[in-house]
Image (cartoon, rainbow, N blue to C red):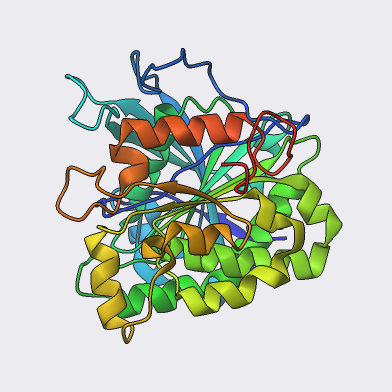
Length: 345
């Protein structure tokens, strides 16, 4: 059960930098819309989307209107559940090739409590946002990711209390850390929603830290069950201490084989994070070979960004979106499903 029971939930936005990934079916491969060779995963008109939301943010004004949920933390990490509906914005696609979305409604979804009934019969993409994100933008970026990689299952957003400000990095990291147990419970509830397909996780920036810790705890508690039911794991621009990450890997068992890391040596947001965190190398800026020695698949986005920070390549770069699509559709973590191991690459 989600800690503290299920409460109402909503969304709130200001995009910073988020994460990417998709899901696997009961057979182990992702529910993805087909993309012709060489085509952009974003090609074609964006469609309206509904995403589910689980958040440890405190509601604002009873969560009846924007911003629904703000940066404050719920007492006891109570998880709020909701259903958000989005439609694509009018006009041409932006430079990134990924359509933007507008949240048109957010509804309480107490019936999701404990079992996430609406995910039954679907593969799941669980998205965990990063630093400097309001709730609404986290929902919007989840929709952009869903469409950008052609994911056709049920998308769920886990939104922890970020202040949505460049100057509140310390608050955000602490909020993410405090939300770890809540994230573990959300994953457990998704895994329990039989007959759901694979539960796949995508995390971005600081969100990768809480996701990694949650997966380590999950494997410690659930062992082979978690290893079998969790699908692909994508860590986009991980803002994690490399030493701490290396120490955590042996405690994640078979889940390690399912991890794909998106890195970039010119990720300027991680350069700043390294300075703030005492000069420790961040996983998202580590050398590719160093990560591959840990048994991870690595997508190197170095020198592929067009923005100032180069911290959201999983959304802004069409080539990397295609690689994510291919990796997830190729059953990452189940060798023999068309994927090459890190050694073979």
